Image (tube, rainbow, N blue to C red; front, side):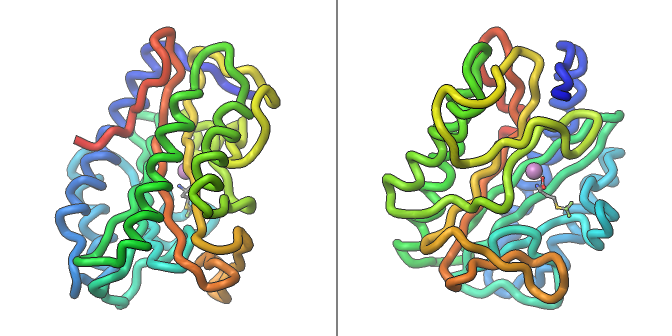
Length: 249
Ligand code: MF3
Ligand code: CO
């Protein structure tokens, strides 16, 4: 069942996503060669705590950290560790909180120092696919309009869309219906309605879309070892079109 949100509930979700956006924008300033990934996790946790928010991922299905940090060929759910960021890496930072009963969730992928033009283009196309998908998140459209729009941007650029992980509804739960795939057909799927909040999150591989999970049970990597990028926003569907709740300042 898709849960529609009242305007006042959307405002609560906005407050939660504002904290997520603040954390990501402050992490953006921390990402540089030499930084230990578990220090980024600690920093994110501290800001959330200061704002009175609970990190959403910690303990979720047993996930042991607050932030997901996905470097290079890691697609999603990379874990903070003693690993240090290196010049030329690209790093996905995925963060969520629960604040006053509502969840927020967003992801950015950043370059560490100078990166190749190839890596930059992958990140740019992935972010563009997210914004093109968001444009389709309007009352009366179909879910497949979002999915197809994301997929077209990605595939026109010569990349592939991960199939095994998808976006989701979000609200009083981190994951709600509907699932929001980044591939599909225009005009298909459920009708989009005002009051829906969706986390749209394209995961884009430079090579093949196949992924595999590492022995730690979490880290998802591209099967062919190619680079992968990930961007995510939580958006509300309103009478005035899509409202990006997790916009970075
Ligand atoms: N943004 C991801 C998602 O919505 C993060 C979940 S990580 C987990 O699925 F650790 F919480 F599973
Ligand atoms: Co998500």
